[in-house]
Length: 193
Length: 76
Image (cartoon, rainbow over all chains, first blue to last red):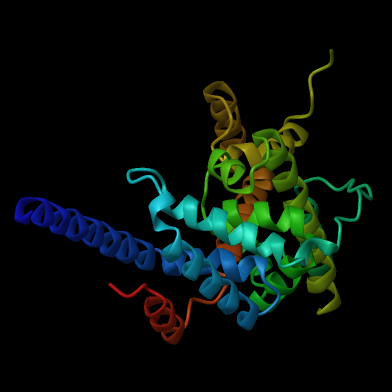
């Protein structure tokens, strides 16, 4: 009997050690996860709630994580699913008014309205407030991809896995999201002039 | 098919270039063009700077939140 119980004790100790390690690794990624949470949320408070729900769920279901796989992507998958569950998606993406402007549009617009020709002076016309406001104006489906790739620095493939959408959709949403962002930035920076 | 204007072509491949999603031949073509065309070169530089600003647009997490997250750990 004592042999069985000491084996049992060892198994429990191993499980506890694995769990503590999992928790520590998850917490070490919190800053990076938060950047995405903040990017997809309307406010800091909403981002903080989302983080707490995400981590509570992650800690509860730690056994479903496969060690050696991408923990950051696993956490972000929980986060984006929770964000969808919150009904935040009630607002559907308004479909596809044409965006004719190319990728040079924002620069051209800033240059032509300032008389500046120096790139460093032109980028200075964009403030962090402009960027935050423009980002908030990007519809959710596009913003999620933009935040994962451009702020979270995930690859297209990781973003596709996290959001459970095809990689081609990641690319097209990213493309469109960046265009919408720049169009909004052009409006904000030129209005602010 | 007529040859596309090189500046228009660079504008089209700007995003895949910065995403490192462009093939090696085209990357070389972009680099050659940028070395010779300050008009496009400024616009590529601007896009790079803009991406950096977007990455910095979200404020970092408050230390209090990190403590709250740590407190969510299950009892041993």
